[in-house]
Length: 175
Image 1 (cartoon, helix red, strand yellow):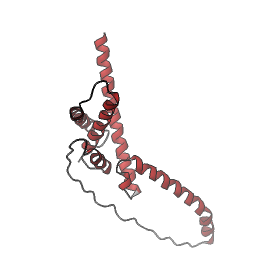
Image 2 (cartoon, helix red, strand yellow):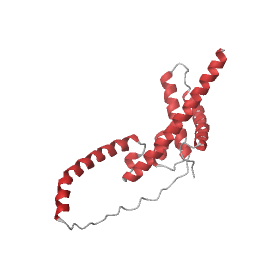
Image 3 (tube, helix red, strand yellow):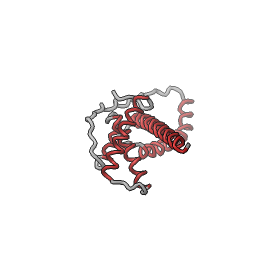
Image 4 (cartoon, one colour):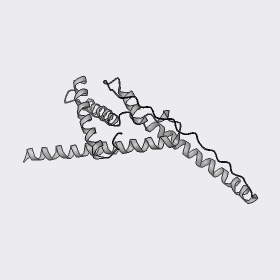
């Protein structure tokens, strides 16, 4: 069982794997200290790989990130097979009153407009989450999105702490 995102264990594992990924990326790319764009890309690549490897293929987004970056450097993971989602349940309701039929006809247009908005926003969400375009079920897409956002939040927290720590070290060296 992988640690949940935003836990201290997740953050510790992320830092370890991020530093290892940074070393590998720097070694593979031979980055010049003056090349800011390459340094930024290396930091982003190593952070994505570290974040995905902490989840170790337990989520669809982590498997998608690992597959995306597998050509950048060798990533090994255990195959993780998730069971298919249960089939949707369809409930049949009986309409027993003419008033209900009239109300449902009035609301039908509003429901279809709302459904179109939900479809558009779901399509955007599928593009934002790595591996989201492979998910058919909206519930699994939402679960994956929440896990991905929590992992990103943990990543940002770790990076902020490292930046603060390096600022403190720099200030101590000036004084």
